[in-house]
Image (cartoon, rainbow, N blue to C red):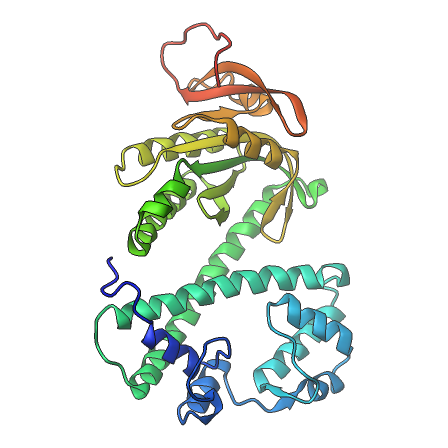
Length: 361
């Protein structure tokens, strides 16, 4: 999709942000003076602002310091004690948090970490949805009045909410299934195949591409990645710029993800080449992210892989050695930060197997 007016001020997006109550967007007049502001904000927040922080904290068992930390960890700016900011929905959320704490379902040592994870995920989702609404309206060159913006929000936001709850429940069920099959003693530590997929030359592409072309490139990369990872029972942990971190429960699934990704991007002329690093090992899973030596090794292998190639570590090579789907070729050991002799293998689909000999990375 091509932006019809590059460089043009996103007037509709600015207007929508004002109506939704964003104080970060500059305006020629105070948002509070807008006749539609209260109507839209009440709808989005589920009711008007009624309470100060002091009032909300005063009627709960949560102390002010903890409330401030929790609010910041969710990604919101700090508010004064006497500022009327909170709604009946905020009051209900505080009551629900108190019940969770009393039931011991949210251990005190992870409350802020859990809030950060939820806040970051929701902030990214909200940013994307606002951009999506902008594209729906502004790319059409149609002047949209305040009443129409309100109507659009009233129609679309409940549908977005319904879909989000549905997707969350499906992922919750899938996560529960994975936990049931994991060994009980593993706790937060699991043995996983960890992979990084990195677009080669992405920085150069960003300098040469228009914002619309760059959006298409990123969308194409993420669409292929999500489809391939899901097909082979893996999970995308996160996307950071031009790099995707994914995991799989089994070594062969991780290898198939890497091979399919490489092949599908190579077949797409509009996308740069890919390079991939894969490692197998114990990984700490925490709030949707993963940590551990396998993650570090996979990252370093990706950095040293040639365009269009896959490098794997010793553990993954050993796990795949007897699998006739794959061919492994020994590569020269790497000297990288934290590892003086990191042994590596090149991974391809199985063909007539020549003797494995050391080669260039």
